[in-house]
Image (cartoon, rainbow, N blue to C red; front, side, top):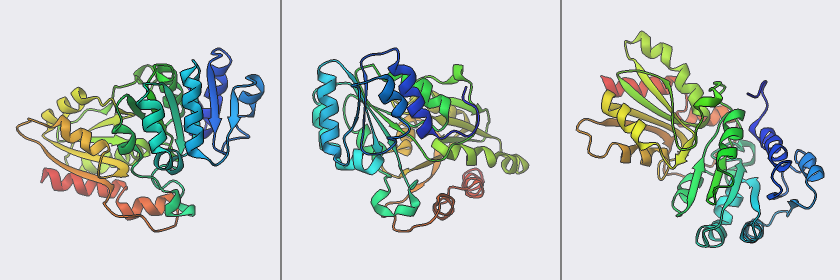
Length: 310
């Protein structure tokens, strides 16, 4: 278990060093970010670290070539550039060729609020999900990334790790973190909250107010978006009859779509969503200001659930 407030970007570098020392096939390629943090890996694993610079299509194709000859590549850079700019190379060089590899991003959704819309990326999950032989993991605490990376990095799939800039701060036991399985945070009876990423913190913060209103929410935390734990989510929604999805992603193609599939065929199923609407994000500001604007707050979670159960 990691202690303190270490950001996931730093934990990524620690995990690369830890695995690199025991797996001679692990190779890391970066797009001119985290260069300093990865120097321990570069020193300990000579010939297996490359700072390719700002040429994302090239870095993906290089990684696919390394995978083709037996290495386990990890590509690390900013989400909009590696997912949106290099999507064709991800599709053709990795997934179409049935090669395994790992994409580890920072700056998804609106994490880079000071840099504006060119650095926002709120469709990344939907893009990677659409590709056959892909996996999508959204860890929001250090031990989640460390464990889930170890469970998946060598399984011959293209795996996307979306590292948020903000943690949810709930210490989930290592034994409860399993690839492809959700985590039941609390049992309830009146509404299922299906939440991913840092927004788990706001979902938990909404609980005392909801209980004061005699509303008992069940909270399911999703760290693996694809493959989705449809059975657990379906079981919970079938029990409560209502659900609220909270995700820092476009309303299209993310956690909401997977939850809707889980509801297919249920006799009683009424839901709501807190996500990013079908509009471009133009504003600058802080992460918290963006959360307020788009409704990622405990107060809005309470409001949406009240509307569902009234």
